[in-house]
Image (cartoon, rainbow, N blue to C red; front, side, top):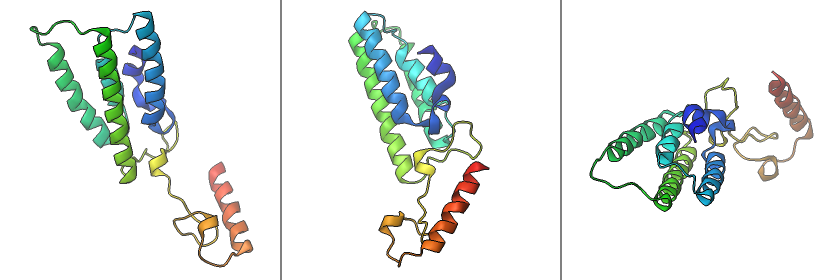
Length: 162
């Protein structure tokens, strides 16, 4: 958990929250089953979620971290049970996935060019090899132009190599 808190989403290709959730839930379940799930796991997860290239996502989890830190400093509260910690982990990660989907849907999940782990799913736009429209080749409404398709495919692979 400390590794995720330190490196965050930036260590995951496209900073995919879905991949992060799968990995984190698997680790937390194993720790929970062994009785070794640390009470500060939710804070570590929130810290890791705010280490991301997408500003609205970072800002949201920066506020969540402040709220969680305040709650953890509440001296009148009792120690959280491991089950409560696991529930909190699931809640945080579900919230993160919902926000991720929302940002992808509104095309706000854009990882900067040159990011060492590539683009996010939400920042990739589909381009037809036949006409250049925002759809796949098989969905193209225009007559198939094999010369244009071959030319666009060559350009795509040349640009990909660069």
